[in-house]
Image (cartoon, rainbow, N blue to C red; front, side, top):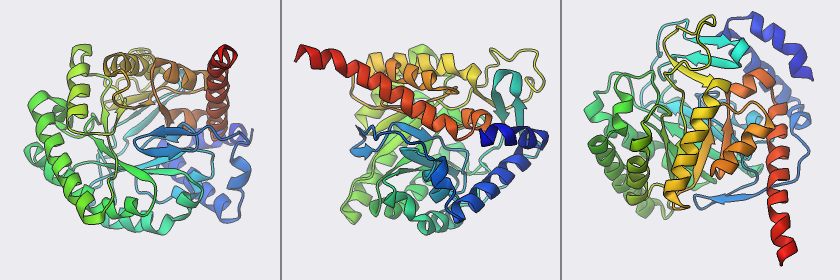
Length: 359
């Protein structure tokens, strides 16, 4: 209710300015303990995936808290996991502004941020200072990218460097590393989803993780985030490569360069990745195709177009183990977390009832 009253104010501002104002208010609310009031009163609904136990299956997607500066406050909103980033090894400003556009009629956003990032030094300091998220049992995801000026043939160097820097943070708390190779806003990044390029990347990541696991005495899960714009025929190849190299989960999907569902709307012609309700159908279809092919060999984290509780249920029905939200949070506020948790919990309880009667 409070967010519904405040949303016209936020939407009257430039989208990036509104983003900063929202985080400033969240930070103040958390400092005086008000974020506890925003957390939904819903029973735990634990999910085991990637060798981790998530207190509930609803998470925050990467991109909202790019710099890991608001982990504790976000953890209080009722998420089962919070993914922060994408972070790049060195600081970079990202693409020129304006680079974020609302399409309210479609409950959508278009962004071309281009991995604006404070860099790993500041990011690691922010995550280190947070701490309390783990006390709330919230699983932490750290999303890694490459710098824009790193040649694509050297992309592995950036991801391995990032893995080395964040690995110790996750040894001390429950969490995973996400590898972002699917943003449409960094030149050539999506080429890393190609056959030879993906094999080389995964081989290097697996070797680096093995060395770090030996050094730290702990194996940290790795998830890879893919694009919705991959051809259906490419999805089995990508899925099989992830399984073969010991990757622990697939995140499906990132934003899309397609404009299905928003044609003719203001800002629809802006370059960048489209997120929100128009992405729901395609991202859910990708989850379904992956689940059918994988047959349970790899958990799927579904993201894309979740704007109501029923959408989260559809992702679970399609074969996802976990569901992330982002753009829906912009349009519906923190209440969406509770709506998704209640809907998924009710669905999972109904699914268990026939089995209970049979037993």
